Picture 1 (cartoon, rainbow, N blue to C red):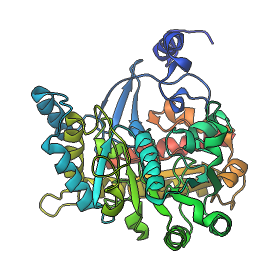
Picture 2 (tube, helix red, strand yellow):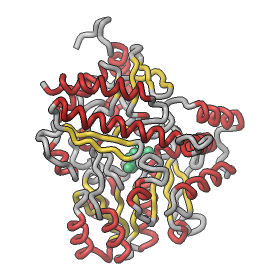
Picture 3 (cartoon, rainbow, N blue to C red):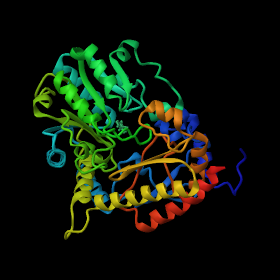
Picture 4 (cartoon, helix red, strand yellow):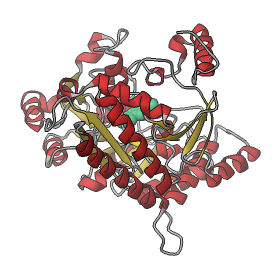
Length: 444
Ligand SMILES: *Cc1c(COP(=O)(O)O)cnc(C)c1O
């Protein structure tokens, strides 16, 4: 492709070429590479509220929001103030600070199943550690995960792992030892019968079931009625640890996470994304009886030089306090964002009917997702159905049409979308107008 001054992505293309020389694939996380939609990734220069500006000066309404963390939008004043004030006092001590206890207390208050919290630096670390803990607690080795669910890139979880892997079409990753992968049993999401059968055969050697309470790394798939409760019952009956991976859904589906929406009481919960207010934080948390096995309270080792980092704790505290505190009885910023997400999702449902482009639209709290279906009336409940039933070309045309109209969506329909409290009614209206035109353009 030739670069001309009228190319709206010219500078992004130059930067991507330079990045590819020194960074594998030009990106530090594969989902950023736009492999699912072709073209080159857009490089961003700045963000404010619901809007981002790229290096070519194009502006967008942003529904990626750093893949979820920015519940209050970009550069929210309360978060920026918390970070800068803490930075002036020191960025890291490698010793405890009061901020860690304060954030742990807030998390415990928000998520009823949680009694103790250990902070780490990413969602990957959270899930990896939670699995080690489940194995230490049960003295068993096998784990059950769902095909298409993504839980970070730890070896035993890089088996049938959803979006990034799905978009790139890698069945599994080279470098994962076969012996490690062998301890991971996989089943289709929403297939409680298959899980029941797994427990019938392997029940007493399964340490943990790990699940995304909304499968949001293969698009946006809700748990079918009874699925999550069925997992809770099976795991309880077999002395298996139930781990809810709420790295994405935590503080996004609801203040208490998706587990509070479906009324499930997991043993362990993994958190990330929103909890760090836009800085790198993860956490694994849950029942005190299990968490007490973590060193130095107990024998399961897990550590981190920058864990509980004061900048990140300050950002997380500012984010959560702002998002869930109501001023004078007004809706909280979270409630506002959830309302906008509802308007957006309802709008997409109407546009699907109006334009005749079959979509499966889902939304819970401040999250949403949509599949471009090959056939009207088809339903996606699992990764197998997603792969079979979505129209990739139509999504690609829609994605680029939206970019041209100033709306930035995840560059793959196997990803969820996010709304922040900074998205106002005008942003949503502009998005739906752009979506109408883009659906007609994508219809072909
Ligand atoms: C993003 C995500 C992870 C991994 O978190 P990182 O911070 O990217 O390591 C784990 N689980 C789920 C459900 C996620 O969405």
